[in-house]
Length: 409
Ligand SMILES: Cc1ncc(COP(=O)(O)O)c(C=O)c1O
Image (cartoon, rainbow, N blue to C red):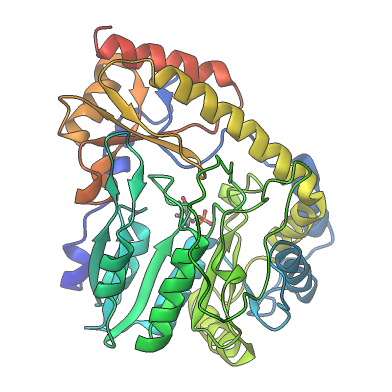
């Protein structure tokens, strides 16, 4: 067995959660998913496909109809042409691994914005690459910020890939368009690929947190972001809005979060052109060969639900976020900022520096299941992640009561 794999740490979230999986007395907010089941129309579409007997191998890149539907979906959010640029994958994490396999080999230099969902940094490690971490830092209010210059300084001509997850899991930090332009411009100079994990782009609440933009660099953006009925943007800032066709950019997406389909394992990726797509097709053959056809029919039904479904989901999530944050901010000793996007509140409790020990104590003594910040890297130590995607918002209230008990309030 490879030393690289043997020495990799397993998930610290699982380290806390495994002890209590299925325990009805625990209020669990540790995993990154809603407790709402996938919409019936999606489940029925998959069942109809199975009834038709669609149980065979399919095209490496996915069903032509699904790829066409994804190209339309993407163009509706980020103006541009996406035919011949989309591969259907067996989940977002699979899309990330395919991008990593395409771009990164042993000894290569990769730069990642952290703290972050650990899979993002572990995948290049599996390939034998060196991952250098550029840390977001929290301010006194708990809002996490990127030192853009530090990121730019970290990316040199030897850097194969820059990894950015925005909106970020776990902090909610979201890259602004002027920062995206600056990063892209720099990566053009160094020949570095940008892999953008934008799986939370529709879990976007705006929040008025947009930073004033400096003048553009003279290159016109390719698209503008789609707006919802209220005039608020429907999506978080995406690299697709600022990139040029010749940019070395791969954007990773998933059906998991926006369509409540975590267990289906369906995602997609947007690549620059047909040449790159052909290479991804080869890699899909060696990894999974194709996404299951009935799952892809579920994906088509999900897209057919339209913006009304995703926008309504985002509104429900926003209400959950506001409810949880309202309570948490009343607790003395708790620091937490309002995340503009994603599914998570990232909080710090005074005097609790060891997040794993604290998460284990919250579970054992108070039946409250949170993810320890250390699971997202040393930069997250001392923090806890709370997934607020809950069908029953009162569960969030009860969770906060348990936290208050633990703090003896
Ligand atoms: C930042 C980020 N990227 C990608 C994924 C992958 O999602 P999936 O593999 O379910 O499509 C997740 C899931 O939690 C995530 O948090």
